[in-house]
Length: 171
Image (cartoon, rainbow, N blue to C red):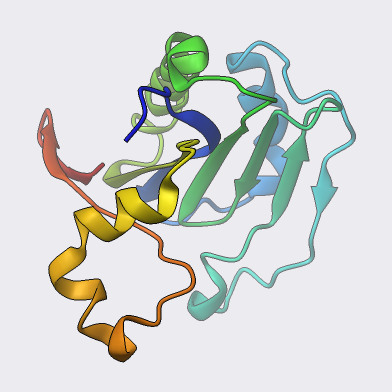
């Protein structure tokens, strides 16, 4: 592969709670203050019934920044914090700020709603002038046997299991 650095498409940080948040719609202002008032649009409140456990992961509050860089969904048993890449931005360019905000969110929620699991997903784009050759060489053994080698597009996804304190996380 050419020596191009990965460009961030987006990143997602999720907190999963042991007990449901009773009124997520009353929590958005404190969250926004905690992360430096980055959500500067009016939050969207959704009328999700609180007495239906099957809907506990459905967002009750959705917040966004005007520039589209930040987004957050607040459900009863989880909070998802998103960062959208901008142009040819590398993850290294936004890593410290994103990491600081995730620590702030964890510190805000964990004492009130104990966190049972953490999720972190990033999507990158690698630009490569010879992408077909690169992927074919990487998967030569597998791509040539799938569909007679007639593969038009291929995607790579991997997950690493790591420990973060007492939490097992997928990174």
